[in-house]
Image (cartoon, rainbow over all chains, first blue to last red):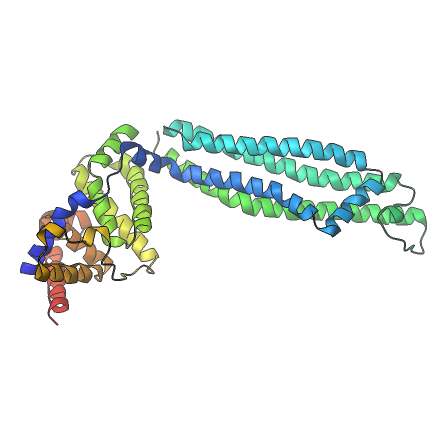
Length: 213
Length: 160
């Protein structure tokens, strides 16, 4: 078939038009998969860090923060904020470091080591965030216990017709229960968000292990 | 090991680029497929024992990856992309009838199924039937029969 011969001739002339990748470009492709996962972990942690600040500007949120002050927990709030900001910034910096490390890695052993390190960092980060949420609720419960008039502190002028002691207990129980629920829900969200990314990273890790380098 | 692999791939990268050209329509998908093939090659590399030539082994892995991905996403079926780099006719050998024929031919090749594409690709790469059969994991007879069928199909497409 003449046409096919024509096609073959033309096809073989195309070599010089093909793109040319350098050694380094090809090299980077092998490692790129892991670095893009770590990049996502890094970005999500930043979004997660920025989000509460955006929420804070909503009026209802600012009002609920005022509750903390009225419960006499203003100092605790300040303290936790300082701790939270420094720890979260520290973690973001860690994620950024992992990302930089993995992006510029040049052998498989180091990559394995770094994947393990990233996994640990993520684990600690999640544990920290969840304990912070849980502790906040517990401290709020203590605040209610120590406050003379928790209902007023929480911005309610309504007074239910039950003994103040009983009211306190009910409020505390509610806050503790809420704390457990919120921690569990956040745990679920973290589990989904980072779980998926970590699963991918683990798969990558296993693939590397299979190559037994 | 990485250095040896990358060096060999660097020397033979044309094979991968050509597979990408045949199975994708734009620059971005070309890049993505190239990377995917590179990763698959790297994963399979420890099992490459040098029984066949490095390039033959590359043809096999690259085509397998392209076919698997192509099957996964049937969405990117040919959109008559005359402008793609590889299918441009060089200006210095411009011949209107030949150009027209080549356009039609490349377009016809694009419309072939994934396996047939692999077959014609190896044919265009000037591989003999033994090597085509070995690369695609079919028998030589089967390769011949399939190739004849493709030739006939192309003929009908060109001369309806």
